[in-house]
Image (cartoon, rainbow, N blue to C red; front, side, top):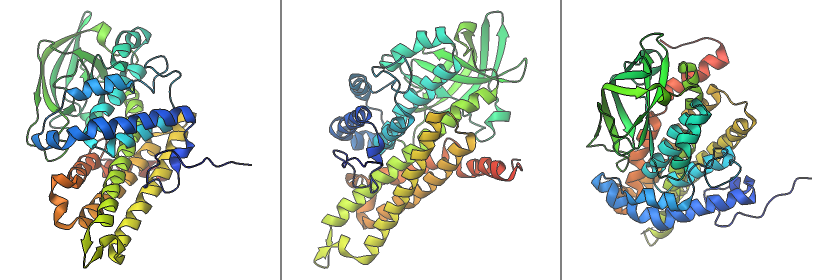
Length: 400
């Protein structure tokens, strides 16, 4: 007989089916720790820095003290053993329901950068870089997207790597690289001029020829310090080339995992937007009564809750497939395409409930509305992820 847990302490109103109760007790405690951190220490920093388009450097110290980095990696971080993919995903959701920029800062470091080293590096490289990254004494970034390339990066990467003895020389440019203006370790992907395969290199902060410049005037993810990077004869030792990355097929394994994390992040954004709209509907009065009592407002709220619940269920099963080691590219792609589309609907409906107040940062909802557009586009557009799934189910490739 299956038993059902009691409702999770501080369970979210958006968790209508009680998905958080699937976490074991020790992982629940870590989730609550993240929830407290985001509510009590991170949220007060968000709006002011989002409006200025600046990264609050104190965030690094807050996350360092929390001990929440490195949890997914066996042998690294404060938690032993490694946590489940369900907790990793739920943590990404939790951070994004407060702010997507902060979630992205953490996800780039703890996900893209650390997982590249964990999956693509050999044991010596993991032991050399991951302990300091797990402690957040060193911050990571992940440089793949290029100024003239996005969806075609697998076959169209323009950044090159040329080997001379035990040194690699990198030339090219990258764009939209989160954390890159201050990161200590930047994982740079480049095409080997000799065999035409993509390789990964860990470039240290301050390396000559490595020039990251902050991208200004963004309308979304304003707290994240995205950079455009110019690489001019950047010399990297062979010891800093990720030894287990020999082609883009190896890179795709990393993207498969991180794409699932972005789907969880999208769930967090729609959850945060829904919660704001629900609170507002309970408090805002028109015609002498709270607008939450109006049929059209309830319709928007219930449709939003349905999107959240359906997306959460999909992601729970995706996490189970990850934990079982049997998830594939198309699993992550379907989740990313579906959940980000539902997110777009929810943030739009939520902003609608706020009426004119929905464009005031004082009410938080504009951040969610704007940041959703970035999440909808990165880690593979909806169209590209759709074609990955389409190839899987039909056996026919529709890629150009």
